[in-house]
Amino acid sequence: MFASVYRSRFFRTLIRANLACSAALMMVMAAGAYGQRIPKPGFNLFSRDQDVQLGKEAAAEIEKTVRLVNDRNLSAYIEGIGRKLAAAPEASNYPYTFKVVHDDSINAFALPGGPTYVNTGLILAADNEAQLAGVMAHEISHVALRHGTNQASKANLIALPAMLAGSMAGNSILGQLTQLGIGLGANSVLLKFSRGAESDADLLGARMMAHAGYDPIQAAKFFEKLEAETGKRSGVEQWFSSHPNPGNRTKRIQQELPHLPKGPYTADTGRLANAQAMVKRLGPAPKPAPQATSGAAPGQATKPSGRFAEFRGKAFQFSHPDNWRTFGDANAASVTAAPEDGLVKGSDGNVSVGRGFIANFQEADRSRRIDLARETEALIQQLRSSNPTLKQGSGSRKVRVDGQAGLSTMLSSESPYRGATEADLLVTVSRPEGLYYFVFVAPQQEWSMFQPAFDKMLQSVRLSR
Image (cartoon, rainbow, N blue to C red; front, side, top):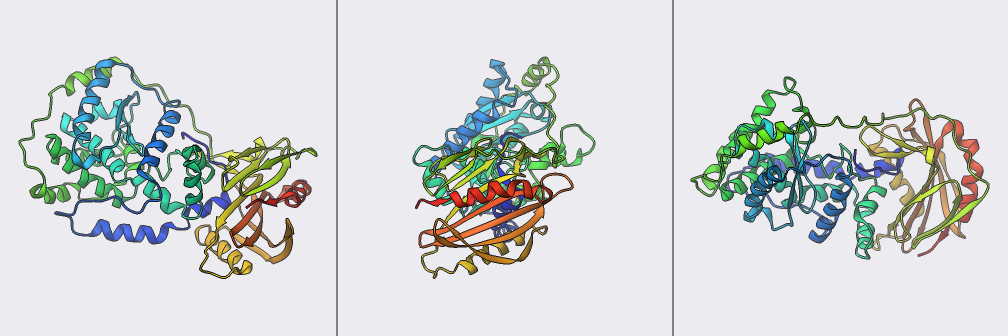
């Protein structure tokens, strides 16, 4: 919805390959005893400062696509609630900001590092200020528990360490995440959480509310109210699409009450009715722009130019047709080259590569002996485990890449183009510093058109490390 992702559908399965064991662990944690257990941030490859940087970059992109409310009084009201909550120790002292979005759907969301957004539809749906504060505390808890970057870390263990090292040199974190297939779309791991994460945000949010002077049980009542109205009331579905209901919310928060800061809960200013009146004076929210449909027809492919341009990066160099674009900077461990008509936008806002080339570098496991066949097979198995449409051809053949021994393996998978099958040529080269792998992508029926360009590109590859 908010950012594009330049990946082959085949290659994007790398992002999901590490989720299964993490999901099982999260379910065990979510099912555990609550009471005095205070949720803590989990595994994370990002630093706190990188969370903040990512949030600022993402906020700049999101604010290009949403309609922010400029009413000073309404903004001050939401800011005031947010500041009370952010002052609680559970908020972990991030640089929070609070803005109102003119959108009728009942929703709110927060980005890593603190930017928090409240829809006007949520303000109208609350029965009291504590309910509104409860939703905001829930979102702040996602920030404090670092759920977005925790999920991103688990989704791409392979390429994130090199990418984050590049961000220390001043590169855009959001831009590099986009290259890895992690954008800001409706299904992004940065914005859509598991039931375990939702339970933890409920519990930490309840503590935050109590410290700020709001009755924590009101948050559970509001979530259950929304659940009861699903399918009956416009705008409710968007909340549950990104906030799956963990169940028994009221019971869990009631179990927490003896362990929370005691009332009286006197933070409610009594100004919610005035805020709702301000929202109503804004008029109907603008309708969102229609989303691109997933799986566009292939259309007529642009033939690769006979003239080539050069890309020089830290990990590798290669030439590509000069009517293609490259995505990824010189320090990136992953770079994509594709024609404009090779990018296919899905309904979730992510963009797949249907025609093009993807180059990647993965740091070596120094504890293991280099075995290219084994590493190639492990990579293919990793892809197959998360992509049931992936099929391998007749086997691998030996090739030379920049004078180094490599393997070429033909694969196929479902194409992002509707009704088409995608051909994927995977080329792997292993050196002491790590595994280089290159993927050439095109619909099977167009392979003969692209093969001469692909052959020239492979011949041009130079391994820079």
